[in-house]
Length: 248
Image (cartoon, rainbow, N blue to C red):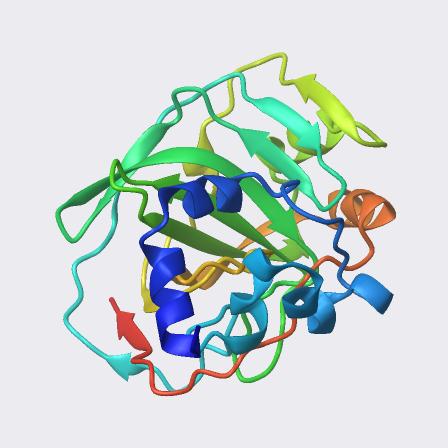
């Protein structure tokens, strides 16, 4: 099967989307070493997009074209979320965490998780961390909202997540409801592009919206995350012929 036909088969495969939402699916992968990011495409036939895909994520957001873009309408809900240390990151899983609407399509919030350093970059520079809010439509399309994080003043929501997060692989639950809106920056200008999951199987089924502005979290909480995951960011991928847009 050639590259184009293979990638189309991934997009048309609902089971592949389900697997994409379950990071533990498939062989055990890492960010560095023998099973690191440069080897993902060789580890499993389901991971081939990681190696041959032309619309991979993350990317450097520099050089975006200014456009009249409709903002993502965010309708998240406070919830006593489940927290998991899944061996790759700290993941916050939603049962009824609300939704977003983008280009007239509604996507339900499934989970959000964190990377250090940030996976997306501006001018080649990463921030301390990045949060990814992963949503799925009824047709299996994915939409991810990215929020760049820097060390600064304490963020109560992130602090509570790090307090509850298991120190080894396992699950826990927040004791009080957390409002995901607290992770949104005040300035809502954003970048948008078509890309992929940043973890295997690297499915190219993702509409990305990444905010231009950062939020602050306590340095102590950044270090608490890095004590668990010193580095869990995929290297930057080529933009290729994609349109990278910036909206206000």
